[in-house]
View 1 (cartoon, rainbow, N blue to C red):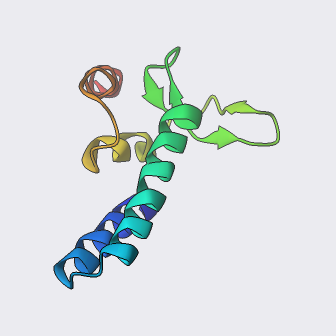
View 2 (cartoon, rainbow, N blue to C red):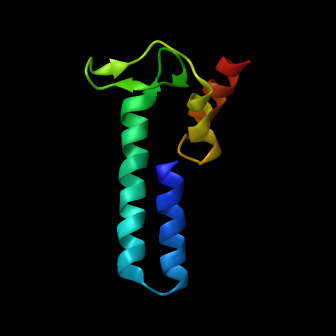
Length: 88
């Protein structure tokens, strides 16, 4: 959700020709995207999982939140296909 909001803010600032703020929000969104891919994608489960920072690993629980990275274009094509197959 934060990724989408940051990208929306970046787009809005670009429309207002405020490149400095647009770049700021776009950088935040890109950092969040990379963190989501690094910490939440679980190849073993073929799904985006919640991340437990105390244990330093993904939780074993599936939730529909794992499909959200597909909706906001964080997932690449291969991750999207694996997630779709897991949901079936």
